[in-house]
Image 1 (cartoon, one colour):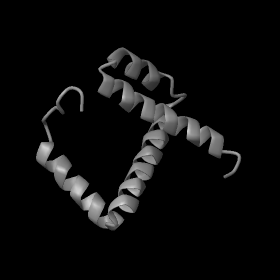
Image 2 (tube, rainbow, N blue to C red):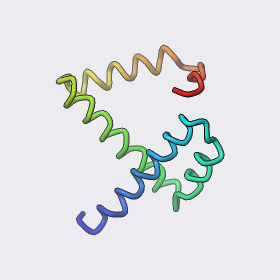
Image 3 (cartoon, rainbow, N blue to C red):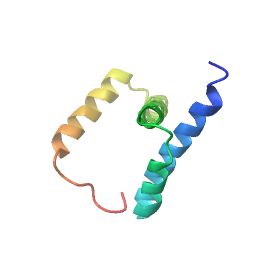
Length: 89
């Protein structure tokens, strides 16, 4: 796993960059970063690892269990399904 850690970190950073660019309104930059992933599998892994790290940060900050956080996230997704998030969020 130690050999794959730098590659995984790069994927996570690229995924975070996509989200940051989108929230800045830089849709072209977000698209450029998305296309820079070497494969669909790498893109999926990058966003999975980013989500796992982000939920871990929230869990550490709030003290909630991961199950509770995922349940809340699932409810939020269900409540907003079909709605586009406001620009700048």
